[in-house]
Amino acid sequence: MSNQHSDQLSEIELKILMQLYKSGGSYIQRNLWKAINVDGKTGLPHLLKLEKRGLVVREKISDSRRAQYLVKLTPEGRKVIEEYIRATTPGKKEVLEVDYTLRFEELNPAERVLVTLPCLYCPYLEYCGKAKHLDPAKCELFSKWILSKTQQSESR
Image (cartoon, rainbow, N blue to C red; front, side):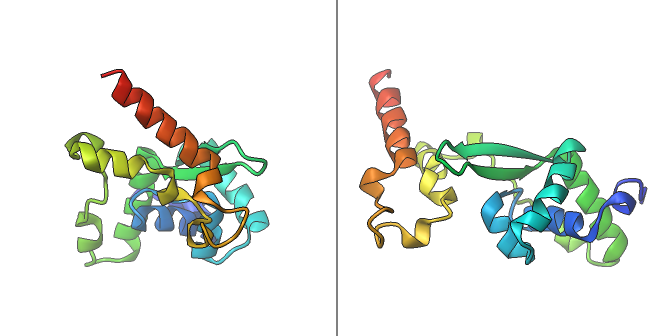
């Protein structure tokens, strides 16, 4: 293995890449910190380094007061973490043989609609509908999503 990438990665950076890899390539940034057991103030500088190196990208998924991001593993990031896995887990090749990639074009129309549902990525999903301020009827992301689906069906 060429250790040029993983030699330069901190333990937290490796944890971030590994968690993204294990989760299929993406994770809500806020939830990522819980998954790798670090606080956001500690993890964010490491995440930004990974983004600057092109190993991850952050996609803004909310325009609310506190922006939410979906962190995605890039092809280069996948290559780096797979090299690391090969080097550190000899004989565990089957870990790399699982293809977690979701191929949008292979989904049927109903599945395509479901995977775009913003609720799937919402960090407040478990509280939705249980608290006054977390109501699906008042959710900006959900409303925009429904509006976009309505506009798509009208344009057909």
